[in-house]
Image (spheres, rainbow, N blue to C red):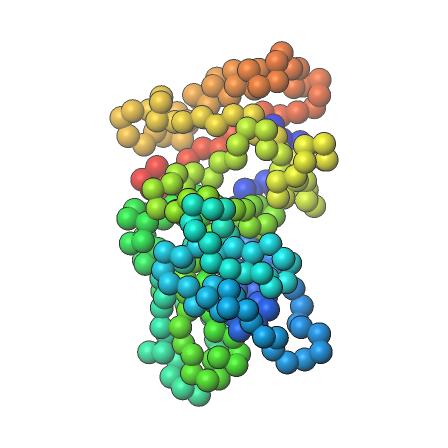
Amino acid sequence: MLGHGVEKITLRTRLIMAGAFLGAIVALSLDVAFSWGGPVSGGGKPDESPEAKAAFTAAPGSCVTWAAQDISDIRVVPCAQPHLYEVTGVVNIGDKYPPNAPAPTVDQWRDIALERCTAGVENYLHQPLDPFGRFTVSALRPGNDEWADGDREMRCVLQWAAPGGKLEPITGAAAGQSQSAVWEPGTCLALADKTVGNPIDCAQPHSYEIVATLDLKTKFTGGYPAQNDQKTWLDTACNKAVQDYAGQVDLAAQKLILTWDIREQESWAA
């Protein structure tokens, strides 16, 4: 991928923020920053549609999506269709939080979700969860009113979040898909405060332009390769790939830098 103007680059920015859903459910994002919008004007809780109620109580294996900024059109869809959440399990935390117990803080919810959801996600996927991959664990937790009424169920979900926090659609069930954190060639990632942002139109200023996706296993067939060996091979393979992608481009003249990802052993195992 080609990079320009990025300082202290990381493709896994780890910012944490939670916001309120429209209605009864609150989304907890464990690895990314995004907001579900402000409080509903006029006070009170709006009526939820049957589609929304079904989404908020979806069973494991269900896929959920929405398009409206206020999440008012949240609904369950077939997993073969693009979706933003895939429910992997339902966890009850009443063993640690009996009736009348105060609700956990956002940081505590994050820890609870990591503790209670990760193992279940790996069982759901039938393979390890790549800690550096495109899928991250999140959770849907009870809202304040539901908590006060004794609801202690938390839905574990998988999501795919871009570096800037935007949720990307997943097509097809997550189990069996590659977890590699790669983007299709031709994808451009925004330049956001000197770091990497969400996918953006390449006509706009951007930090990276993806030129190729390479499979390390085509070169390294005997198991996980040392990272220095990955770098050596990728130096040659990516230089060829950028010329195939862009023609005989003079990167130095355009003040562009060719760079690439390497894979950790945990990713290789997953």
